[in-house]
Length: 373
Length: 59
View 1 (spheres, helix red, strand yellow):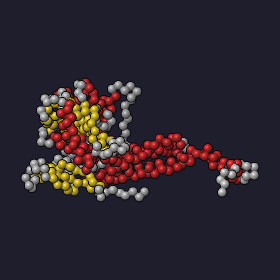
View 2: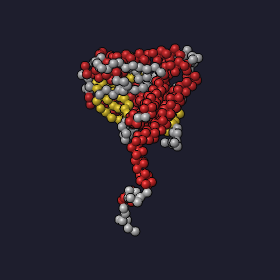
View 3: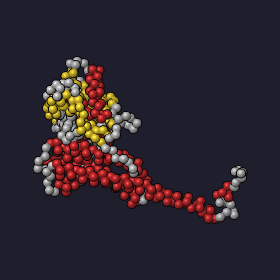
View 4: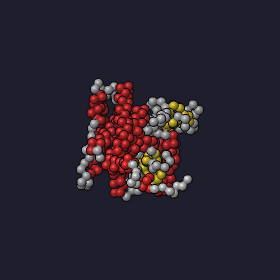
């Protein structure tokens, strides 16, 4: 068979004796794709995004149902609790104006604290008999539902706007972001069970290490929901700080560090925290570095950085790497087994960076649910 | 679509602070880290919770 003997015009249906229908068969799809290509793409992409939005909706509903059944089975709620909590889920925070960023951190701190105080007070009012552990648990569960609700509403808004405007480029950022949004939403949904049962979560590895170091020491509250104690290691004084466990709280480590530095003038700050691992990195790997290892909106980090800089105190960090899901759900065996090696890393860091007679602040950063001291 | 739902079991490890004798059991509501749970049967030391973790079934 001779494959070299073919006519390109005949093949494309362009020769004079070709069938006009064959020509149309080639040209029509090209014309359709030129004029309607974006709409077709929008149709296909929107189908996938719609599925994710429906999933987000079900995550929000499931976590809400779980919260209500937890409250009904374990606490004595007021009769109209569902409508009151529904109102609480809709609360928003307007961030301060940042055109002139000078002095913005105290404003953000004030806003966040006001919101926390308000939520705590509302929760206390909703139950006739509620202890501190349950107040912090409910506060965290309300925050989870609020975040899932916000994720659902924002994603739905972007999706519907793109569809309404029939604008394909508008849906592209959403298509790029949706896998990350879904990962976080799934992690939050699964966090509900651990919080309800008061189990330690991956983020609690910092408080776990420092809580262990605090055993057999005299403890005192240094800031709201924050515990402080003193200990000794090879002729050095250790100032140990962590959130008050086993409550579901991160405490106020920035305020605590500021107070200790002003009173005791330590020579070194060491922070232990969970950190998000990069793709490809092993879970429960540890790493050491410089700077304030503390998450959140940034106010605590700002406080620690500011006071450390003012007093020229070096800040060291030890982080335990994990995925976002591991950080907010029940602590894995691998992460819990790292506590011993992290403790010896802290000791090594103290030996290498301080002299006998000096003092060191050690901050266990993270949510201390299920981790006492 | 056909993703298997993973079952995670939660365990608690109790350890004697004197003889370091440890045992693993299923997590009970009310368990938290460093809680004193009992006295050690062999040395009468303090037994505390030293670990609480989750393990995926079949691991």
